[in-house]
Length: 116
Length: 112
Image (tube, rainbow over all chains, first blue to last red; front, side):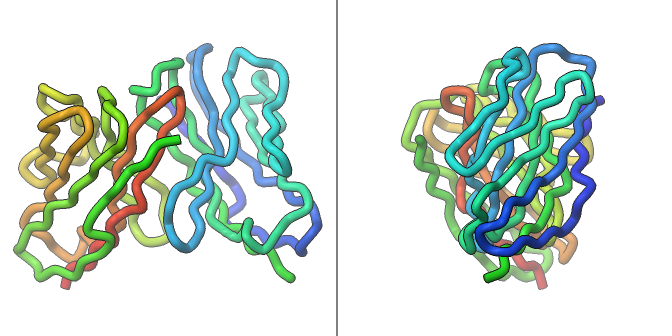
């Protein structure tokens, strides 16, 4: 069975600092996608970043980057220059295959508080 | 990106009643997904709705409790039937477009 584990229920960071959220997953599949979603208090789920398993290069989206360690099945999210608007719950998610018809499996979530 | 309109955004219901949640997307998509998010928890997939066929339910979810309709490629509904306080959750619809899954804003359901 595929599982996603986020071991940090809550984290906090000072504004303008850097924070890393951890995520590990378990699968025997070789073709899959990994995602980080953000859910602010408004509860709209927003895609932060995604990574294709076949790509060795770590994905980057502005202040957000990932450290993808395929052998270790680890997919951490680094947020640089944290902003107050980054305060949200962050979910790591996993999907088998390249089709967007596959279901997402979510981790438990990490609540991030950015402090002024 | 994609636009997903979900309504109602919230509702307070009496136990034993039913609520139908609607989800409208701005693109034609094969699959739509319905998730439940219990307070402070992660998202759990309820079912996958494929246009023109019966929805596929995940373990622990049954059609009698969560009937789903998918009349066309841009619309789906989820009904929460015979509600109890344990059904109090956020319900989210989702669809996939270009390798990304997009989500509606969710329906916050409280059952008294």
